[in-house]
Length: 103
Image 1 (cartoon, rainbow, N blue to C red):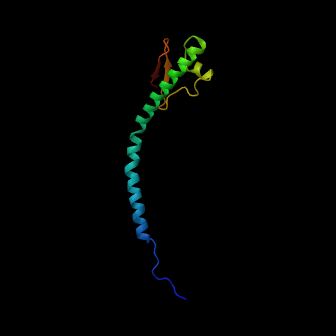
Image 2 (image 1 turned 90 degrees about the vertical axis):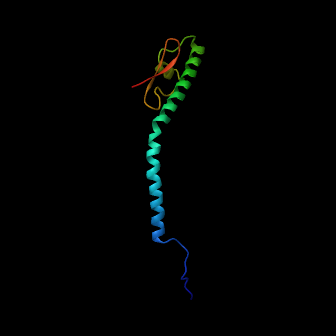
Image 3 (image 1 turned 45 degrees about the vertical axis):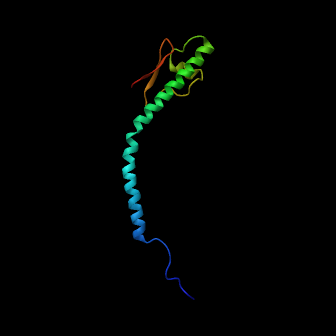
């Protein structure tokens, strides 16, 4: 029987170095990602307002009047959520214009 004495593989030191490099990269990336969370939520709110504005127009076509509140759109099945991804609410004006309301 012959034993293989020269096995190919990673040593413990090599594995620890790879884990160290991955850890350093994660420590560098996590703060960068958390900084952009607010910007992402604000862009999501802009998109939500545009979507609600479209639903206000659809409601106006169906009922010949603008909805008085976002809850009226929700009750009618036009929207499923009543607030932006960043937690701010939305307001529907008398002219049907949708605006963001800060908490």
